[in-house]
Image 1 (cartoon, helix red, strand yellow):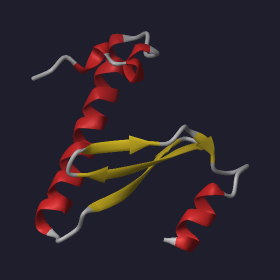
Image 2: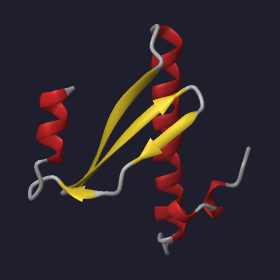
Image 3: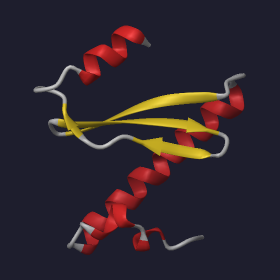
Length: 86
């Protein structure tokens, strides 16, 4: 497979173990979205990624993913508004 560690998303991790865990997490998210899109008649799906007090929205489709910037969901209404509208 591709060496994912070269992407900017993983460069901020200094410890090799942290980088490896981040790559495994992204791989797991890819598997979940691929299974969901394969088993249901959808053109896209959303995943909410929570890491501590920060969150990101990930929109998956058959071409790939779009990821928002991380935001503090305890100080922002983005998560509440997304869940209310979606």
